[in-house]
Amino acid sequence: MMLRLRVELADRPGSLAELTRALTACRGDIVQITVMQRRQDVAVDDIWMAVRSTDEIDAIRHAFDNVTDMRLVGLRVGAVPVDFDAQLDFLAYLFAAPQRGVEAFVEMLPAVADADWAAIQAADGTLIYDSGDAGARRAAGHDDEVAELRLLEGATLVVGRSASMAWHPAEIRRIASVLELSALLIKSAALSVRQPATTLTGWLVTDSALVIA
Image (cartoon, rainbow, N blue to C red; front, side):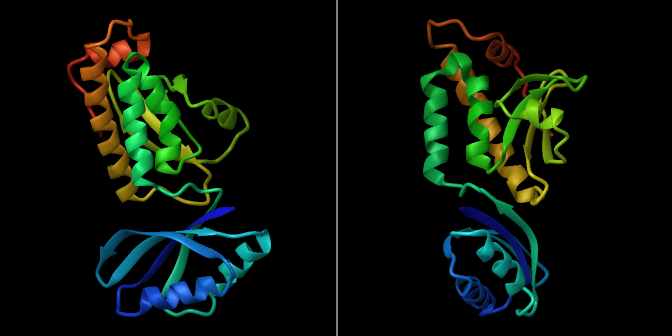
C-alpha cells in the first residue's frame, strides 16, 4: 500500500538524510519526495512510501518519536504519487474528447491531485457533476479535507480527500494552474470539433471569463 507522509523538519544539512534513514528502518520503500515549502529554516516535505502492512504504518508513526527537529504533520493511506507523466496523459485525454472536457477534468483530477473525489458545485451547494464518490461520501458523513476554487456564476470546483492530510497551499496553486490550462485547452479544442459539447462543457466554452479564487 502507498502512504503519503507530510513532514515538517529543520531546513539544515543532513536533516533529510536523517529522516530517510529513520523511515527506511521501518522496512518501507521511499518512492518519491516532493518539497512543498521552505520558510525560516523550516521545510515541509511530502514523502510517498510503499509499505506491506499496517504494522509498518505504526512503526513509521513511532519513528518520529526518535528523531529531533521533525514532526509528522499528516499521513494518508492509499495515496497516489503526483506524476508528471500522469499530468501529461490527463491533458492529452482532454484534448482527445474536448466536447465533454469539463466532465473528464472532474473525473481525472483526483488521480492527478492525490484526492479521493472532485466535483463542480453550484452556488446553493448542490453537486452539478462529480467524479463518482463526492455525493456518496457526503451522504455517509465523511469529514473530508476540501479545497475550493471559485469558477463561473457562483460555481465552485471542490476537491476532497480524507481528513488525514490537509491541503497545502502549494497543492492548491498546482490545482489552480492545471485548471487554468485545462480550461484554455477545452475551450480551444471544443470549438474545433464537430461533436456538440455537453451542457456543462458548453457552459465553460461559451463563457468568456474563468474566475479562479
